[in-house]
Image (cartoon, rainbow, N blue to C red; front, side, top):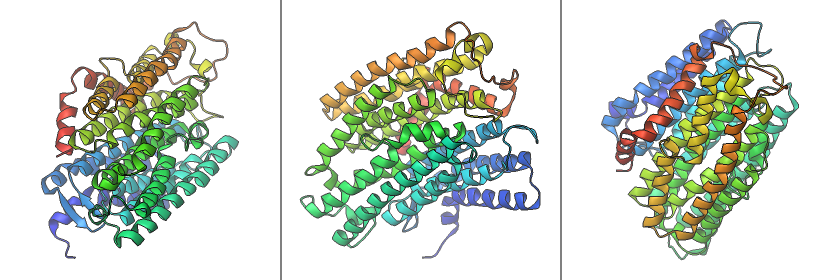
Length: 482
């Protein structure tokens, strides 16, 4: 095919991210400088974000058979780039600003891994082809193995990387096997051709069933969630942020596209299977989060429940579903950045394990009141309390569920939210108790004047602003669903 100027404009975010990766790599080869590599990464991701404006003018456009840049892809690219920017900023705070303090080994490679994984996520959200899906998925997943094991001198980090490697590999194998069966049935890997599959074909349903298993591994839906708490606990805090935001948003987007275009998903036993996965994820995620005294494990189980809620939008498969999915993923992303950002600042400069035990947050209000405010806003939003972004997201999910008459899933969502309220309130209460005796680490006194702190305050402010005045986000979500 002939590539025109419009095609290159549509590819700008991916090209700029790839160019930034090359520039950062050459910069490291010339001179190792943490500050310079960080600046190259941040400038590149900001330019990629700005490039979305001209991309909007040419969308929708099929760039190659593997990539189609439409309005949904542009919206999801924006979320991925914002999350990538947040992770890069948090990584600098986590690894330490000054040479000779903080992380004791090479720090610059972390930014290369983040950029590479972001590039994979950009491919993933803009593909309507199973080959493109697999390339994007692996391009995003491979750097994650290195990022999770980046603290290689800690046993928990290496263990988490190994678990993610094995279980992510199992998920990819299931996806690949399902893809092969679909190709054998349809003779094509394009979503548009797969949409013509016979709804009564048991072969096609078996193939899609395997793909559902693969997606469930990647999204950590119950009962395929076992890796999640261990990996969240063992991964460095900024990497856990990446897993909770970029990784899940990108995978859910491609799954939503696939299921919306294939009517066979709503035939036979596939629909009940998806409903059981959604219900199990809500119950298992919330009930197991109740028992956690480690905040990263608690957030891991909480993410299982949240993506169980989100699975509800797959069943109606209409314009409102896409709108609700965009709203929910955006609100969850900003909230996760705020919550994990607090854990990151509490854990830096790098030294030993992260500050993830709940007792280490006891009395945080008396030491760092503004940091406590950010964590409180994040917890309220995760619980879905009104006047926070999380409430808007859940409201949209319930509206879509009512429209599709998914009564028992709505019931589970309400029960799950009520259970969630207990453990989110437990975290908040801990923050305001009298100071404990076992304070391991403190964020710097001037944390709010540093890049990581400013980004954290912005995320918390967005959570409140979108909860009070969600109209701009709703307009963007409506535009993405057209």
